[in-house]
Structures are given as structure tokens and as C-alpha cells.
Length: 480
Image (cartoon, rainbow, N blue to C red; front, top):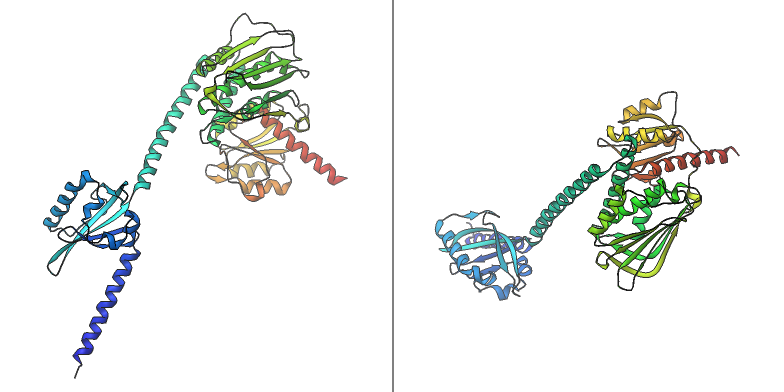
């Protein structure tokens, strides 16, 4: 005969175990779970709900659920739950109610996503709401939308600037026109890269001057000094173009056209709070005031007018002195101690030394053609260009081997590192040329030089010659 009490005890234990499991599940849930009775008073408030609303469960139980709804939405919220109870529908999925507002115990409002379900228990209808705080998600979406709009705005502005520069640039020959356009595009690209590095919060003036003068002088020709100044994001591009125009003008007509020429770029904060920049040339040819105004001069005046600044040029037999005033609204002085930077002559490449064989590996055909044409004019014989790893391997299987190679890091989605490893094995020096600001290079190639696109032709030429010179020197050391 079966003991009825044992059956009852077993059944009670099963129910108790099931209840414990359910409580554990509810307690460990990541979302807030709130159950209300027919009077819409809270009878269950899980730990996630405690965290979300900032109130303990024992204080929340018994309160109307509308306590956690902003006052202006309470009537509508209660009516919504009662209508849902009357429909007989058992549940509505997360998000079906749209984004609604909740209110923490301290009065702070926040956005939530909710699902709702109902069940009859012993003749009483219970409704359960599961809530998810979507404040962070909405903020991320808003930030993404703002970022997309800002990128679109900046891209269109940049294209408009490029269009204007192309339309306004004049030159006597096609070659001069291409050189002028390329130089100005390079200046825009460097300004863009600097802004990207600094999260579009501005740029260091030393960095701007160094970047825009690097390709236009021999080692030791330029010195710049001044306080540690950061210019605003809106001023980086105009100042980059301004310094670029001064440098190219000095190369064509001024101090940088001669080995003996020198340029000093200095800046300091004036008593009124504005910043004065001085571009002083010496040791170059005798200069004369031009009877006509070229686009470069017009560009300098235009960008300064955009910044509400001023420019004045003093002409003398020793060279020109350009004084530029920038209003205090476009810069910030981080410290008064002067920053002085000179070129290191030891880092300069010997422009008279030419080693002819250069292999170019680049998947963008127009970019490859432009690089090949420019580097041929600097005295290089070009092997390729190769647009893929297979094509590069075929070139390396020929009789002529390169003295140096220039490799795009990403070839239509394929990393160039297998080719780099082969070149390394054969003792052929190489550099990477990439549009990525901070490319993820394999550890074994971290020491290899990197030139960022769009590459300045003179810098590229110097880097390549430096590689070949160092490689030749290391081979001589080994022979000794």
C-alpha cells in the first residue's frame, strides 16, 4: 500500500525545488523584472530592477508601478496596462511598445525598452513587465548619427576646397600645374591626418610647420622656434596651406632655392593676446616685389581672412620677412617655454647619389602610375608597378633584381607581408606606403619605414635613397 504522505511530501519537495529554481532565474536576470497585481501594485521586484531604479525590493513591493513612471506619463501608462489586461493577449515582445520613459527613485528619467506578459494565477490576473535600460544604446546611436553627419560635412567641405584649388591654380606648363596641385593636395592631406590623430580637436603648430616644410629644404636650412601652441581644428587646414605656400615660394624664388639660403619660422604671443608668426628668409637671391599677384599670395590672404588674421610682407635684399597675425580665438598656448627645432644634417640623404632599380607594389593603378612617373623624374628605374602578390613574385623571378622596394600594405584585401618576408630573406630593403594612419604591422616588420599616402615625392625619394645607402653600408661592414 502506497503511503499517501510520502507522495505528498515528494510533490511538495518538487514544487519547492521548482520555486527555488524560478526565483534563482528571476534573481540572476540581467533585465529588470517587475510583476504587478490587478491593482497595478508591485508584488515582485528583482535585483536588476533594484539596480535600475535605485531602490530596494522590500521598499518597492506594494508601491504602484506608476511610481517609476514620470508624472506626465502615469495616467497613460496605467490605462495602457489595463487595456492590455482586457485584451486577453498573453504577451508583447521586447521593443513592441517602443522606447518609453522610466524614472529612478532619485527622480532621474531614462529611456527603457519593455515587454509585457500576463497570466491568471488562482483567479487573479498578474502582469509582468521586463525592462531594459537603453540610455547608452540611444546615446551611441545619436553619436553615430552625429558622426556620420560630421564626416559628410567635412568630406563635402574638403571636396569643395579641392575643387576651388584646382579651379584657381594657374601655371605656364602642364607639369607646373600638376606639381602645384599635388603640393596643395598633399598639404590638405597632412592637415586631415593631423586632425584625425587628435580626434579633430586641433593641431600642434610645431607639427604643422615641420610637416609643411619637410619636403622643401636641404638639411639645416630651416629652424623654427616659439611657444608650445595648439591651433583650433578650424585653423589647422588654413595654416597648413599658408605654410605650404610660403615654403614652395621660397623653393622657387627665395632662400630655399640656394644651398646657402636659410629660413627662420618663429612665433610668440603679442601683448594684446594675438599670435604673431614670422617667416624670415636670408642667404637667397635678391628679391623684388612682384608686379602681379599670384594665386599663392591670394591663397595666403584668403585663408588669413577666413581666420580673421592679417599678413604683411617686407621686402629687402637679404630676403623677405612675412609677418602673420592670428587672433587669440584660433590658438591656445600650452606653455611659454620656447620650442626650438632644427634639421639634423646627418639625417639628410645625398641627392646626388642615384641607385636605379625600384620595385613598386601598389594595387591602385592611378596611384602607382603617379608614383612611378614622379620617381622616374628623380632618377629611378621602375620595376613594375605590380598590383598583386603574384605579379610581384613574377617580377622577382626575372634577371633584374630591385635595389629597394616600396610596398602597399593592403593589396585588394591581401596583406603584403609574405612578399615583405621574401624581400627580407633576399636582403632587399623596402618601405611600406599606406593610407592607414596607424596600420597594424606584423611584429617582424615594426622597424620598417612607413610613408603615409598621399606620399610627398621628395620625402619618398629621400627615404628610398636612405634605405639603399644604409643597406650598402651594412654590406660593406660585413665585407670588412
